[in-house]
Length: 132
Image 1 (tube, rainbow, N blue to C red):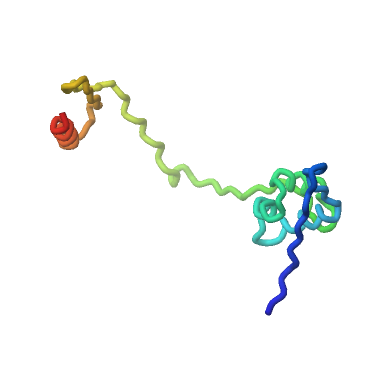
Image 2 (tube, rainbow, N blue to C red):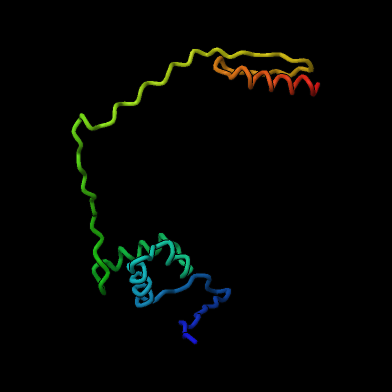
């Protein structure tokens, strides 16, 4: 049988709805976010604290107890020659309106644009006429 970490539960009374975290606890939680495969949001959910609070603690403890300084990291960029770049997207065909309005019995109206598939429109109108 393997041993697992004990489950710790904190009960808050009516007087205090917020948990008070010691500096040591905060450091432990922040260190947990730095482990491979861990994310701030995952640790936040497990610990019952908001992700924004964890980010604040990370900034607060940057440089302490093995918590790395937060420095901007840039990804390398490689520029391709113009001959390899993809051609610019063609401009979309300008829309010239062209709405067709079909008035059916019973006050029903069908509006389609000029690019409507004729066969699909025929089927739709057939169904609508059957359901009069």
